Image (tube, rainbow, N blue to C red):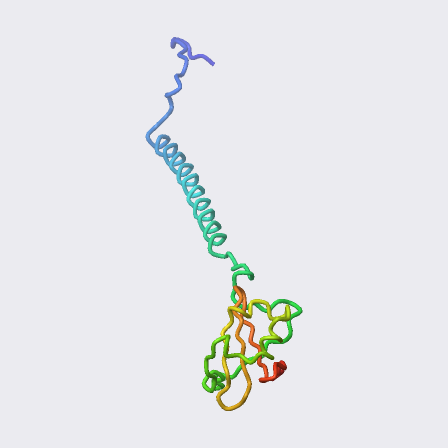
Length: 151
């Protein structure tokens, strides 16, 4: 409706905006920006934590562990800490081994025996052969006549 005597004026886009309206608008924009910044911060934090968990949660490959117990292996024998079986052993050279033991060691079961460490028990006539493989150490006890002892 027109008021008589007054010319009709078309309102501009900025008409009707007061200081309180401006404050509400800037508050709204600040609120939206804060929400976006907070979402970015939370996503960055989550991505960082996920990356760190993945990085540090890597399990060591069992093939790199020395002497792993594989499925199907016999039950491991635990040597008591107070049993110092090497105390009574004397280090011997390969050429000091009895011929019978050398013949027994030719079997494929004792592969790598040429580089092994050999011990002789000073209180008895038994010999210990310690074969070092990259993944495990094998120990064998022999009598002086080359028979494998199961102790």
